[in-house]
Every structure is written in C-alpha cells, then in structure tokens.
Image (cartoon, rainbow, N blue to C red; front, top):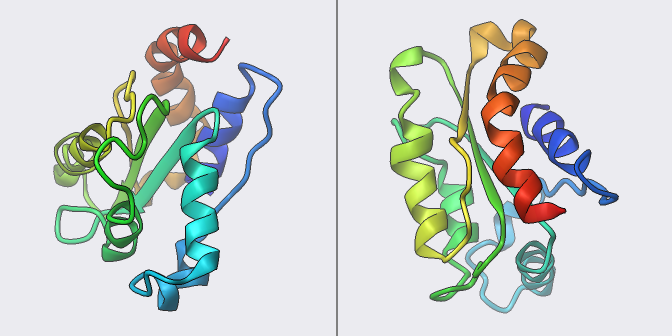
Length: 148
C-alpha cells in the first residue's frame, strides 16, 4: 500500500502508469537464475521510467527477497533509472535504514536516487497520506526534473 501510493504520486508527474511487482509471488524463483518470470521482471524494472523500491525493515535492513531480486542486476544494471527507496518499520529508531541500507544498494547498481527515501512507521500508517505529502514537498522538484 505504501509503495503503491508513492508510485502513484511519482506517476502523477507524467503520463505513466503504475505496475506493482510483489516479490512474494516469485519468491520460490528468486534463486533460480534460469527463471524466466524473474528475468522478465528485472528487465521491466530496468527499463521503467522510474521505480519505487520498498521493503519492510528487517533487522534494520532490507528483506532477503528484495536483496535477492536486486542481486540479479550486474554492475550498472539500473544505470540511470530514477529510483525511490521506501521502507516500513515497527519503530522510529530504524528510520535511517532507508538511507543506510536501501539507498546504497540502489546507488551501487547505478540507479539515480534523487530524493531522500521515505520511512513509514507501521503504527503511523493512518497518517500515510500526510507523510507522503510532507515527503513530496522535497521529493517532487528533483523527480520532476528527471521525469518531465
């Protein structure tokens, strides 16, 4: 839900559509390097206009599923892709995980990460629209420059 709302906000900058990829649907194939479904997903992400990468915080980091998916990209595998990191967590003290754990992986794959990531605490999900609006104030200008 959080990633979808962020993606819709980003898509509002242009005429693009939002496609959601749930890694849980291909979890059993993530370590099968011959899995066509996962290869197709990685290709779609790499050629998208922009991508929101979202993960719950797990042990102050990203989930193994997201890491396994991102490991399928070679050096510069996301070169130039505008990427927005988003994480959810159970406590505010993990808020830096989005910047210290997810952003570096995206940057290492040569994605363009022009904004601060968004971290949402589970217990504050009722104010998600307000949190996204607050994040959008700073995120929108650089994303607009990249996407329009």
